[in-house]
Amino acid sequence: MAKRRTALNSALKSAATGRPEPLEEEAPPAARPAEPARRPATLRPEGKAIEVLKPLTTRVNQGVLQQLKVLSAEQDRPIMYMVGEALNLLFEKYGKPPIAVEQPPGRGN
Image (cartoon, rainbow, N blue to C red; front, side):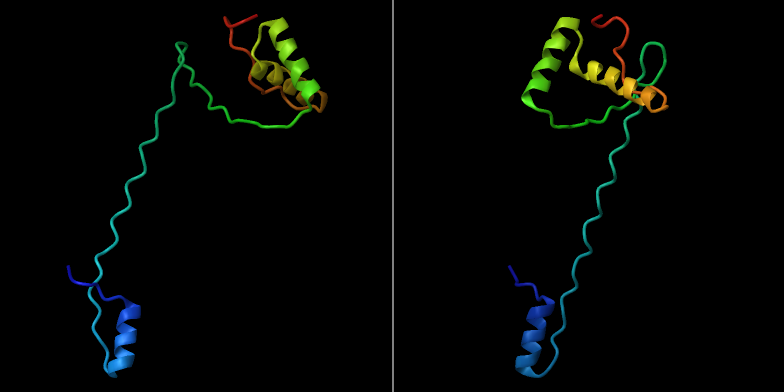
């Protein structure tokens, strides 16, 4: 296999011999793969698109987490929906529309 000449190799050889060395033509970089096709929105039976949810991470002390888990179990509702309810109450307190995710009908309470 022949050794490829790089710009640095060529410059070093040119400096040593006093005459420039031609560079090998470099192959064009491979074409970038096309972006994957975007998935169409998933539709619910009613024909409404399912909203993409983004994760939200926060830190709370151990007592807060335990109390939230107990409340979630007592109410038979996932923590995600309990936090959504709390966010909606916070939004309303500050005059914003309640837009947080609420428990879908037919699940839990």
